Length: 163
Length: 132
Image: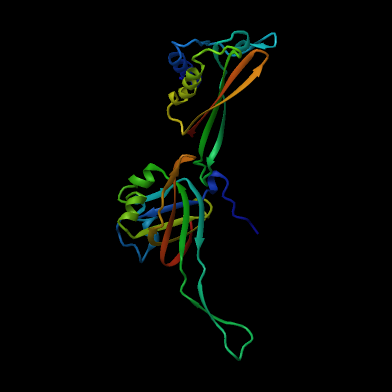
């Protein structure tokens, strides 16, 4: 077995977003590896990352069974992060991808790719598309640097890949 | 400009017309007697001490740090006959903490200690700023 550490430079978790307005739905990878690659925004200074990918279930009981029955229902997929706000990532963006605030504000469909452990040859990632939500920047005198949660509400399935 | 320099310059201006003078020397001890005890009615400011600690840890090491600087000042006066303007001087020294710009914390705590016929005012300044 092998753990998935992310504590060295080559192994950092990396979140990329492409919100250039192009519909890549049929080929998410093209938003990052192909024509859309120039518009990829790398989100820096992530504090924590949570990938939610649990299928939903529906359970019921019946009189002829001593245990519950269950069937799966569609998953609610999302990627949740907390980040220290970076001026470029938050306001400026990259090429045709606006900053995170504007992506959220304009409800632009966004493509994302999350590298689990770096982005060099052989490294794994998941990708998909959806909408940015749950942005809630906060700052206070005891921690005078803006931080914010951010959730990518994923439309449909995750796609997995290897660099 | 170092915090000590800025603070010293501000205090010098703030209490220039008072009965308390300002020394630019560090409050070193001569024969186990600190200068501020030996030379009463003079403001002495210590050297800075600082610590840089992590405020926010990030996965890609774009960590956010904060630098905390502490600096101590002393004034000793006659306890039996304090200068009539001592309260004004103390308030001016406390207010001088605001002369240090770009800090998220500008604090100053004052403590007094009486020994023999002397009373010593000790000012503990604390400044915190964000750094990389």
